[in-house]
Image (cartoon, rainbow, N blue to C red; front, side, top):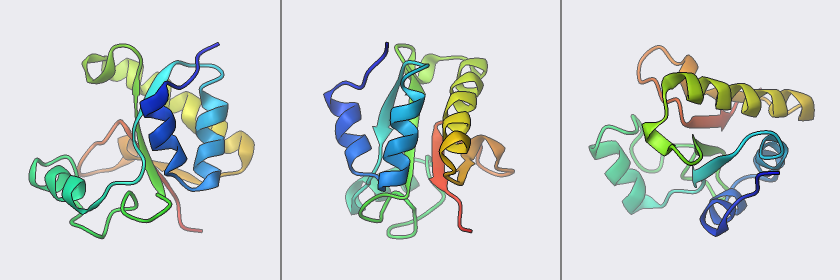
Length: 124
């Protein structure tokens, strides 16, 4: 069974408890890395300036403590993985969220910046 390495666990631990439960459930069925949970001001500014985020500090759900968003990538391919692999990963993440009753939004569903690695708590 897949499990998180130290870096993924650190990013996971910086997220809201509900998001941690989603990640823990999804890793049981699919191997992936958690590459962001909480993002500080410097990292958020860099993500914004490089075009990886449309939100400036402190307006991303990554910026809250604990984070209300996480980014994941298929393991071991990472960002070299095909879109199909990211869609498969999203299926596992969204399925875990549904099973646990955690309302998530996936960046792959967005109309502007398609962010296949990004998931965030949906406001209810």
